[in-house]
Length: 171
Length: 171
Image 1 (cartoon, chains in turn orange, blue):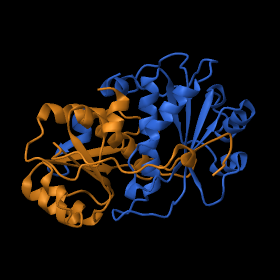
Image 2 (cartoon, one colour):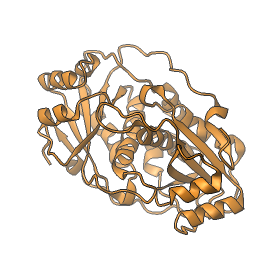
Image 3 (cartoon, each protein chain N blue to C red):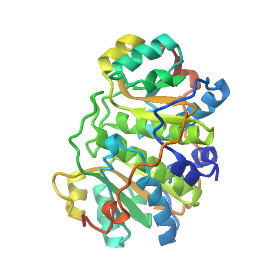
């Protein structure tokens, strides 16, 4: 699938078929994350793949009861180690690096006929407790993965001129 | 180009040909960013496209004198508005959302035969001064864009088992 087609087809999928994700597909999808760039090549991302139903239900509770979180056959728990590196621009590298890896994972999932959803609405301390994640590690995002039950309409986007300008700030 | 091919071909390009980026290509590349997902569909990204040589040289100085920043025919200055929204997980949404958009831009650039480089090593206050960016706006990353002069070897990646585990934290 072409890059632009995957970008256009990607949706936030909040309803999944009761169908497991093949191990080979999962591996190819995570490989897309493994190859992402990161600040100083830190690769501070760590991915916990949760397929156990009981664990998924616990994570669903930690994610404010969002039902699709346990419905999805796979939850990718995207963590970061080495979370103290701040770039000169003032941003911590780790949320950006984890986001790049997940963005690549998300597009590769579309290429494999699968759907994903980014989840930032969860209690980090509860997720850490459920998965025995050490204190110093951050859980940056959860991402559900599975076969979509349906494909929602695209959400609205701002117009080009609302987000792009030339040569200096003109918004 | 297939998604996985773009992911595998992507490099951090730090040397560019003296050849402008066609407006139509630039538009398709930025469209890949416009279509990115964001927390609560905030779309808080704003992109300033810098092509003016004098401005690029100023930005190069603000980016610690990294020569390729002015060599690239285009510098995308990736900003964020609405920077106060923090997700339940404790992360600010804006660096993550801007990173997703830039990740899509970066892969679409590969599909168009172009190269990019993520730059976090810059003085935000200087970039804001050069481009008249308001105080409350954050400059999250710079990204150079242009035709690569050469394709560097891939940098090393951690092994699969160093970054992926199953069911609970096992690193």
